[in-house]
Image 1 (tube, rainbow, N blue to C red):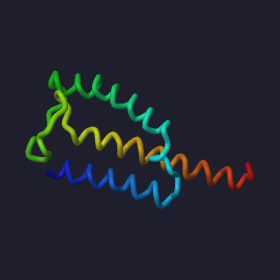
Image 2 (image 1 turned 90 degrees about the vertical axis):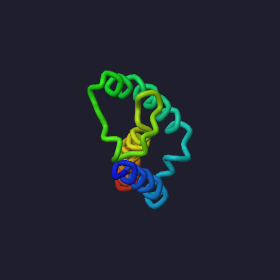
Image 3 (image 1 turned 180 degrees about the vertical axis):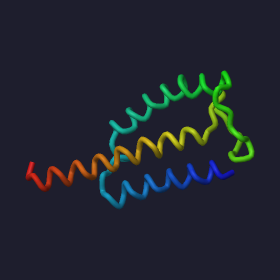
Image 4 (image 1 turned 60 degrees about the horizontal axis):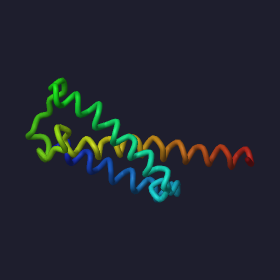
Length: 102
């Protein structure tokens, strides 16, 4: 269940960083619209890769719950990956604007 624990930790990290860095990304409607688009694309790409099976997962490292052919952990991983990048982007973007008095 290592993969499961890691994606849960990553998801919690993103939520905590959003609060600590005060980016308020997770409160923005645009973020959730963006995330919805990513989920659709994830179903297409990740679904194809796991259906073929081009990508094979070790079921002992995860919960074993799938949405179609995609392990549920992949959705949390994607959320963490995208969320962390956007939080860092927003945080430094605010810092640059503050320094340049924009």
